[in-house]
Image (cartoon, rainbow over all chains, first blue to last red; front, side, top):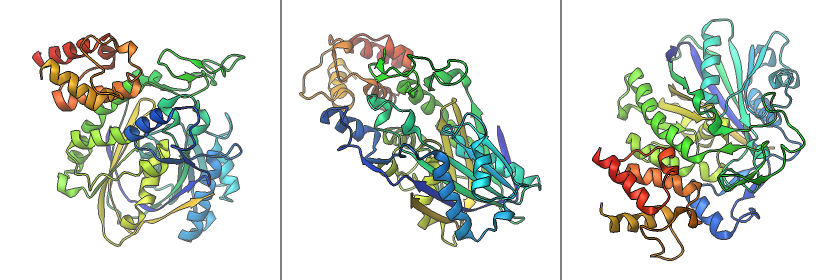
Length: 350
Length: 79
C-alpha cells in the first residue's frame, strides 16, 4: 500500500535503554571465543543493553515518554492518543498502553491501544498515528515503540543471543497545518510467519510441562518452544527480495532522486545485512546510518533509537530528507519518507 | 568462475576455516562445523554479489557437498 498523510509533524524522539550494558565478547559464556569472534564480526554487534528481570518494555517506554513530555513542555492533558507498538507487552490483557496512560497521568479522554508488530512496527505506528492526526480528531499523540527481545532468547542459541538488545522509545507527533506530507509504503507476507516466531505461549500452542525445555534443534541451535526462533537464511532471502524494491518504491512515490535523500535509516537487523542492502540499493555509505555495534538489534525500537543516536543531525534548523525502513517478523515491512528538522532527541539510561 | 576459484573464494568469504586448504569439492557440508546458519547466509550473499545468482534457502538445504554448491550457482548462471 502506498499512501501520503498530511498535517503531521514529528517533534521529538526519546529512547530509554536498560542501565545494564553487556559486552558480548566478554559476557557470552555459552560459546567459544572463536564462535563469538566470527559471529560478532559478521553481525556487527559489540555490546547490547538488556532489561533486568523486573524491567519491562513499558518501563522503558514510560521513562522515555515522561522525559520527552517534560522536555517538550507538553501538558499531559494535551495528549489525545497513546499507542504502543511491542511484541513484549506487560500482560496478555489488558493492553499495556492503557496501563501507561494511567502511569503517565494522561487524560481519561486519551485513546490508548497496542499494536503487535516487530521490526516494521515503527513505520506502521507512525502511519496509524499520522492517519489519526490527519483525521482531525487527534492533535497530539505519543507513539511508544519498544521490545525486550532478550527475555525470549535462548542464551545457547548463537543465531539470536549475540544479536538482540532491548530498548523503549517515545515519539511525539503533532497536528501541524504547515507540515510537509509523509509518504508510506507498507506490506505483508504471512506465508513467512514461521520464519521468525516464538511457537509456544499463545493459544495456538499453549505452554505445557515441556515447552520450556531447551533442546538441540534441527538447525543445530539449542532452544525451547518458548524461545525465539529465527530462520536466518529465509529472513535474509525475504529481506534481499523485499527491501531494495521497497526503497525504490518509496523514493519513486515521493519523486525523490538519489541525491534528494539525505539519510537512510534502516532497521538495524545486522551489519552484514545492512552492508548487503546498501550495495544492492546503491546507497553511499555516508547516507546509511548504522549503530548496531552500540545497541545490537533492538527490534521495533531500532529506527527511533537511530534517530536519537544521530540526534545532532536531526535537531538542527536544517531540513533533512530521510527514508525510514523496517522489515522482519510477520513477515511485515514498511517504509516512510519525510522531511525532518528541529527534532528534540535524547537517549536515557534507566 | 572455475571450480578452483570457487573453492578458494568460498574459503575466503564464506567458510573461513582455521587453516587454508581444508575444503575441496568433495567436502561434505555436514562434516564442516563452519557450515552453520551464518555461513549459509554468507553464501547467499556471496552468490548474489560475486556470481549474480539468486539462490533460495530450499535449494541451499538440498546441497550436500561443496560440488553441489558449485553446480547450483553454475546452473543458475547458465539459465
